[in-house]
Image (cartoon, rainbow, N blue to C red; front, top):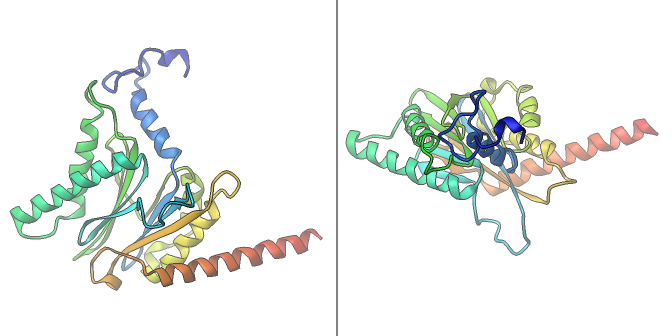
Length: 255
């Protein structure tokens, strides 16, 4: 840390002379050191994909899922400190339940995102708290179509057609920009998301990973569900076959 940050990074409520809040920047570093998660909004729904690194062969593959159900029509994924993200998920579920009891219907994702954003932002205002060390992605399917939002540790939220968080977010963003998600269905996006996560995965530095995927849209009747394991496995087989074929053709050209 440069000298300008000395003494100004001890509290989330303190600005540095150049207008920075270092505690929030440190929280973003926690996100950038986490495994990658991406989400894409297609013409008939939202597909979420996560590379869940296998830290130990003794772990069960279904433990510590990084994709969660928030409401029947809303799914969430995260990058950063998972314990922090689960606290945010708990708050989001309470907001959904409160809205349903008051208004008798499902909560619009824009309203939920605003509430969660304010909750996360509150933890950047007081010296007795620290910011949440995670970013989250929320996707839903409503009467007027699919919605996709991302919330940063600072509490800032953005609406997206496609977004990525985690250590390979820049590489994933480059691949996402090549897509035309508004023209693709959820079934087509499953393969695209699997392809991108395999492309950006660092096989040298990172360990093996489990591909977690979920979707919400017309194909699920508006409910957030995990993509069937058979479909995920089939998408991975196609992606790996295409990557091996591409690698083989490059080796032949070198010869």
